[in-house]
Amino acid sequence: MISLVHYLTVAAILFIIGVYGVLTKRNIVTILMSIELMLNAVNINLVAFSRFIQPEVLTGQVFSIFTITVAASEVAVGLALLFRVYHDYDTVHIDKLNRMRW
Amino acid sequence: MDDLVYTIAFYILAAITIASAIGVVTKHNLVHSALLMALCFIGISGLYVLLQADFLAAVQILVYSGAVAILIVLGIMLTQRRSMENTNPNSGWPRGAAVVCALLFVVILIVIAATPWHYSSSMAAQDTPSVLARLLFTDYMVAFEAAAVLLLAAMMGAIVLAKGGEEK
Image (cartoon, rainbow over all chains, first blue to last red):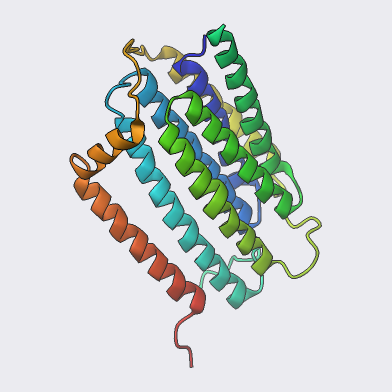
């Protein structure tokens, strides 16, 4: 029988993969993708809590709707910043973006 | 019988999700990473179906595997001039990151195992869209409006940032 713990474990694995991507990848686009993975892991947690602990009120699902909204705006602003950085510096490799002064 | 089907579906969807997520952070071609990310989002929406969150499953497919994946692919296309080979390199310190991640994972598992969960035995809400709509427009009205303003601000900010200001 699949319980809450199974879902939390899957979400934990997904979150850890996202953290690993942010720590090791050197392309800004991949780092954005890893952040999306982490946000999705949190959403799975929220929906699983909503299903197994308070199935009749759906508070967790409302929370994850807001998370999805914030994630969508985050990815839009992040990509706009990415275009600016690429336009100004001609690279999206974060090891080359190491100047303190603009 | 239903339990067995549910269990098998859960493990298949979890395997799809986790395998494609691992692909996202290990592939050396950015486009492969982006497509695997879309697959990962589809797997997550399957998990939402299993959790009886049908509206969220639809939103997940529309917003994530639709909009976000397309945005990311656009970002890749506009920032890579040369070939896609090896556009997604690792840093020189993947082992340290793996150790950090493993430790964090162990801590999360310990916390999950140690927490006393109070399961509810009542049935999940049927017809989630109408329940969610009622919640959004009563209890979470202020947060809903704030999210609307946030989306508007983010879109305008994205346009201004991507277009660039008046530079002389």
